[in-house]
Length: 263
Image (tube, rainbow, N blue to C red; front, top):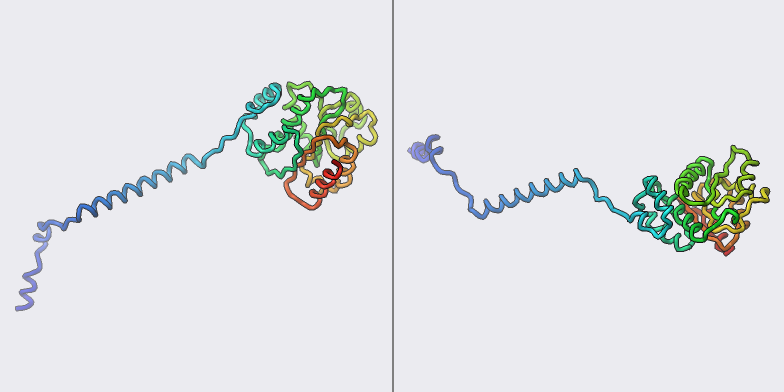
């Protein structure tokens, strides 16, 4: 009898289908709907960010600098429009005539960071070819000197200043003749430039306005410590000095100290 009574209390399949399902309270339904909408919105935002990529920081344009129109024109024609973060920091400092010891990284636009100010330095001082060399740019290797010189030619395209690259593998006599005619911007390697400073009497560098030593750490690692020190002592002290290095080493600090002591 007890088993029969219990069986009678269990609804049939047909009765279960006809019985209405228990309804959730309206507040719980609203909360679940809001949560689903939030998850959907967050997923859409993540997808949009992935498609767009990271935000791009815009830096000022070269056209906004207080430099010669001839330089701006050359920069624009060669596709140099906006400055990098490194250039934004270095160029105003150098345009003010201050010395600079910079640590740069790949893609920083370091070469333009010093080329634009040194060209402007010559422009503002109306530096004539008869004054000889106004800027010396030292680099560690012939290849790096030639690469930088290519950029020098581009930037000086509409300027009257003479320029030249002095590296091994070319006629020293031809180089001496060029220096005798007056080269306002000299690009080269330390050993060869020192050789000309010692032996080419027509090489006039007594009116130098700026010395740039690019990749000074590499020049020192290659063993040209003594050459750099002699060059620094031979040049006039009342000049602007710019050094760039990828690393800070004891040798680099030593060169910086030597320059400071001569001032």
